Length: 297
Image (tube, rainbow, N blue to C red):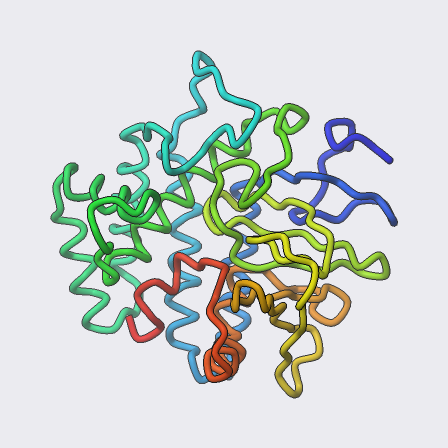
């Protein structure tokens, strides 16, 4: 088995040599957001949610531009080996708000529905204290329920910030996590299952890091019994892994059938599976910061 720290840089995603199990893949921010934007744009064509997906493609392109507003990880900080960027406790630098300002400016030219456009203007006029309170509500559950109209835009800026920081960490020093992302502690947005080896990697909803977790195991409670799968007719590369202990599910995208799948983008585009799961009494265990306000904006 090859140590992840010795592997040469590769394309986005957890793929390695056949049979290789890489514990953790840190993100490449520019590639992450560019790939997400392309996938959202491609998924929009002919989709009943096409306008919504195209607006999110614009948001992902804005995320790519906002990367320039985030500074490097301060080297003076001593980071723990266990969840070094824990989102619920991390002291955010003010430059994440600079990234948010860039997103707001870029999204003013996006074809947004009136409620989303109004929310964007309200967010652009908000002061630092209000913006930080919104971030705390999103990341820590503090300050009550976050304003769902503002959440996708603020969440997108927080993704830029944490993805940028995560990319600078030394991957060999990060321990495995008992629950959530090993880098920031956040929930996954979905999982990707690779080729013949059927290795499963979970994709962080916040920092875009990807970590290995054996299949047929609930990521949240680690139950291995009572696992089943829900599918949608005509979508062979898409499944919801159901955990009877949690009564919750996480989507899985199978790379053989869906080679272009991008976890966040394809999660948004597969809401039919969410509706089917909800009808049968299952709740989501994954998180998608782009969906907090709903597709109708």
